[in-house]
Image (cartoon, rainbow, N blue to C red; front, side):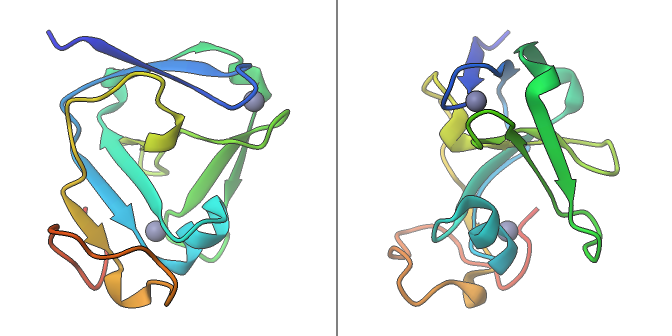
Length: 136
Ligand SMILES: [Zn+2]
Ligand SMILES: [Zn+2]
């Protein structure tokens, strides 16, 4: 069994644990991720629901499901506003913002999604494969 990774929001109210391997680990450059993170791109990994559990503060989480989207959602701590993991609407996976991790994962991002939508001021492309749409 892989070691448990731990994560939390900025204020520390909400904490969780998650295990590898990840189903995907992607830098997403879509405009929705830019809005949701306030940054050039989101870096999220996906796991099966059984690999994830909350360890504190679950009641402080606020969820926003984008009405016009098929599945886009964001969740955040109601105290500090930090992005947090969420179960997809299909219930098949949990999407975790990698920046919320407190433990160093063994996994590394495997691709860029929505590369054609990236901001002109985004960081460089590096060595990873680039997809014009979702990579997962
Ligand atoms: Zn917080
Ligand atoms: Zn995105």
